[in-house]
Length: 589
Image 1 (cartoon, rainbow, N blue to C red):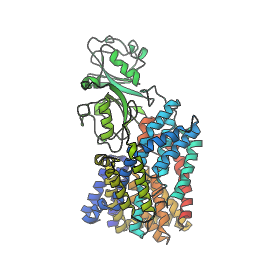
Image 2: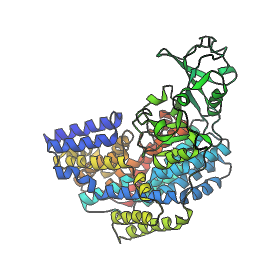
Image 3: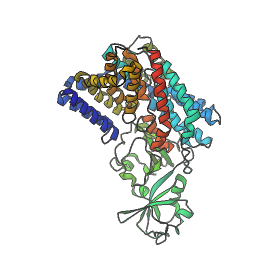
Image 4: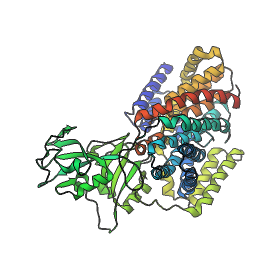
């Protein structure tokens, strides 16, 4: 009975993770509560995940990453390394991936991607290359670099802690490095010689002076006395003079999508106009036309500052993910106007204040430079150009780098456990003023911590109920006769398939007890199986939802869902085969 109930909860959890009907961190909390209410785990075990060393270590690594980023060490070094490649697309792709991989090996993957992304887009703009040719390599490089060290990615940390719980063994800081470096070099070679030719070549216009190349859809109202009243779309100056396209018309609360060019326009119509940033802003110069968002939420100018138009992408730590602009009273609270939204490679043709925001959305903002910086610094938005970057703390860079080196040294030599070394390093970052306490709290991806803490009891329930052993027996029954290598291949395949539709951390936690039981049943060393789960959980190249680094570059790169599938599927398959050959060499069965 316990096995059946556990498997039902597991299947429902996977469905909810894959469909995203409910936020992933909320799904993990529901899992925790259901396990406790059904008695599959005790109340103490249900909430033990919040004090688990893996959760604390992941939180500390987030703070360490923020401390390094806030000093500017990553961006300055990254900019020089990337620009060193000159005008060669081949060398540029390899350099971007190698640079982000080095940083991702020691700081948070998403942090390394976020810091280097504006630099990559700037280089692309200077070389007149579409960012779509460079941003997926940036994201993939961060994933490949993360598997090279123990602290490079949460699944590595999780598998180290879980292996200690199950088997009484631990990985050292650089146990992942031999396999990780080979996979990284292979990934760079693939993207340089094959993958970059599969990337889309998307240019949709000219952007604000410094960054992307994309068009937006903006709502425009026809006011009383407008010269275009009574004229057709073809007769108006919108297309002929302003280079704008009417994507839809809202008239008397009824939406007319894709209107024909002979349709007449009238006072009171709300037009959904598509065009690049420069052309959209020209609407304000036209008599009788008003940008709806500016009209409803006028941008304050009393502070005397220049008004700027910038792009900003939502990061995982933004509190606005899952909410609409109306719900958070965006214009009133932040003093900024959202002119348009870009999502999944296309502009959003809807009333922007009714759109539920997602991680990776790019917002076209208008307001004072001070308020734009405040939004980026305090509220989880990544600014993509149009304003000078927030000043770093370069004088603290040596302290931040020394702190990170100290954490690596203490943990790799066994002087301190990784959880203690990372937490000590995080405190040093704050006390040495590499970042403020508030910045430290904001740098932590709290949903990821809730996700890990909430799914860990399910892993324990699978182990205690016998569900993990049942699933392990099924794997062994299917491929066990071919030896432990085929079982390792199956475990790796299951993990990377799960991680394409759910969080990599959750996938690792759920497969770990199955991997352990498979190793025990085969009388094999559990270390290669735990390493396979850790690496497979980070090899998520096939979908934008599989990892936050993929989602972060989706909007700025103008990518569509299947761009990742086209480029990432061959890489995922090749990594699967290569990793399962290499892992037993590092940790024999």
